[in-house]
Image 1: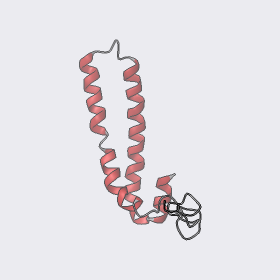
Image 2 (image 1 turned 90 degrees about the vertical axis):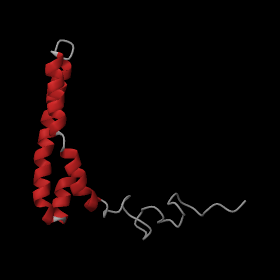
Image 3 (image 1 turned 120 degrees about the vertical axis):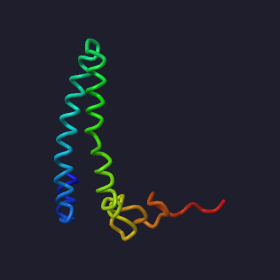
Length: 107
């Protein structure tokens, strides 16, 4: 859901988002392969097991690319949604932290 929205609002990221979609498919495949490998861990050859886990780890460089590519754009999105302008976010009720009501009276 996030990638289509980013693509809609940031068309210049199309190549990055296309790469991320392909990498998400790779992550899903690796996840399935890892599940199958772990299901047979008790009887698997330890060298083959180690080799497969290392191969999968090398393929998971995706997370570094995703973080470097998307964090700057995600940081621009207000979170939580809303805000002090009365649209339901923190501070919209006049309270100091959005929890509602007035600030506590001094003791």
